[in-house]
Structure formats: C-alpha cells, structure tokens
Image (cartoon, rainbow, N blue to C red):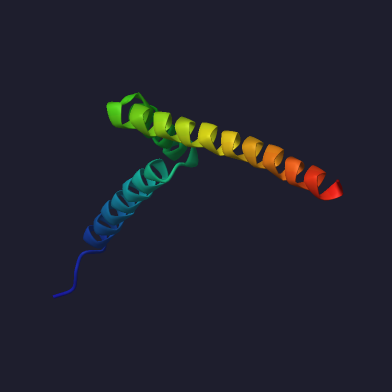
Length: 86
C-alpha cells in the first residue's frame, strides 16, 4: 500500500527539525568562547582549592630554589675562573 505524500512530508519536516536542534546543541557545546570560559572557571576553582594552593606554593618554592641555585652556581663558577687566572 503506497504511503500518503503528506505523511512523508511531515516525517521529513520532523526529521529536519530534529536535525536542526541537534546541530544547534553541538554548536553550543563546541563553542570556543564557551569552552574557554569553562576552562578558565575550572582553573580558578582549582587554584582556590586547598590542593591548588598547595600546588602553587610548591611551584613557588621550586622556582625560588632554582633561582637561588643558579645564583650560587654563577658565583662559584666566577670564583673558579678567577683562581685559574692567578
């Protein structure tokens, strides 16, 4: 039994609307601006948490120790060069 053309058109229209809604959702989910804002919010939440504060403190300590070591190494290397020249 053949299908009614109006029924087929209604099914096509419904499928088209469903596809349009799906594409709108995908565009919203994949929006670079939205993803950037979500990423920034996640980083801020982490940095404000106790674990984030401890991590930043550890990084600060590591950076400080690295700078101190480099300064000491320069002074020691400079003294070695001066001793060789004598």
